[in-house]
Image (tube, rainbow, N blue to C red; front, side, top):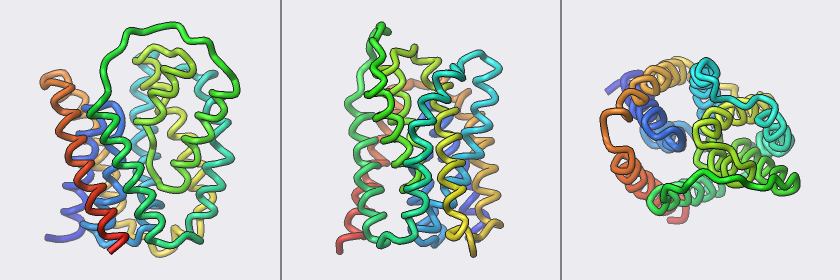
Amino acid sequence: MSAVILALIAGAVIGLALGALGGGGSVLAVPALIYLLGFTPVAATTASLVIVTATSATALAAHTRDGNVRWRTGLLFAAAGVGPAMLGGALVGRLPASALTVAFAVIAAAAAIRMLTARGSAERTVRVRPGRAAAAGAGLGTVTGLLGVGGGFLAVPALVNVLGMRMRAAVGTSLLVITVNSLAALAMRAGTADGLDWSVIGPFAGAAILGAWDGKRLSAKLSGPALQRVFALVLLAVAGVMLVDAVV
């Protein structure tokens, strides 16, 4: 099977997951790029940032039309993560490939465990603490810059629990934060973009964007918790394979 066909299939699956679950789907982009398309860990995290940026920006436009984006709050939250995202983007080329793989596997496993254990909670008012908000924004920026993941599975809980946002607004605003952080990280990765196969990345990103729209419709027809559990188990298995691959 050609690389372009594999990229289209992988992008569609990741887009479906992202659209159906509202976050977390893009975490599969890096392992797909490494194990299906033969990218190195550094190239895969850079390519993933391109895909995440394009997909998040497209979804952001849709949420903006629905009035679900809190621009002032989101930009302030993102501002705390821009510096760490740029630092992570600058450092990634100096880290061993095995270290990146292990770090990514740990983050993917954490995302899977959170999906398996998450329970719905009532919306509540939270007292905003600037220090906690800045720390959460910086942490998200670091993860985005180093590992090339959007971090929706981290951003949404932070916006709900730290800033007291309602879930719908948190999902929309997280896309703004992810887009800003991803662009900041990409700005510092100019050197790692050399030699990327854009004939593969383009179809991958396009399929992910289209898949996200279909995933949004799919979520209205199927059980959200069931979809989340299946995705979490797949993600946990992928994390295990990556961890074994890095340490053996």
